[in-house]
Length: 231
Image 1 (cartoon, rainbow, N blue to C red):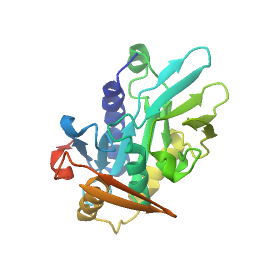
Image 2 (spheres, rainbow, N blue to C red):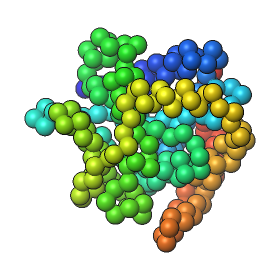
Image 3 (cartoon, rainbow, N blue to C red):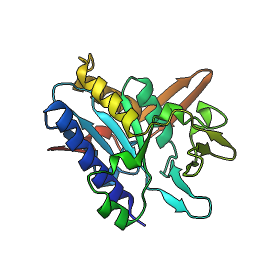
Image 4 (cartoon, rainbow, N blue to C red):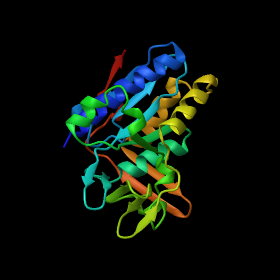
């Protein structure tokens, strides 16, 4: 069984190479520090210099269940159990947010399919992964299951609900290609502001008739722990 770090490193490398291929510009990567990895909502942020709109990617290692021919992914395994809600709010602010769920799980698969792992991955937006109970139920432990026989993806808390908006790599690539052709009105300063709105000390989210308030007491400056890498 491979680690989530293996998934992150291999898919990030392939995604950066793909973006460089379609844009001719070397992307940058923003990544949370190891100390903040459990509290921030994404693993990697990848952007093209000059556009100001990075892609926020959350990778999940898949556990393969042989009897069911099914992959299982765990959500909200963080201290506050609210990672999914934070990513959803980022998406509602207009940012491109994706879960990347690998349909591979062994070292041999990684080695044999290197440079071709992006097509072996599902891409889900947080807004397509709303569990039974609605947005207010997004806090707490959840599981995503993808059945390789039926090609059906479901999200579970106590009760399962089918995920309708999953993307294969070709759908995901069309989004990347179309986005990079647009001129974005959002700059990097706006990203910093939205980041701190979502991950700052105190957040109050109004979701329909539900108000969810969160307190982060451990970190006074949520953005200070990000490291920057340019490839």
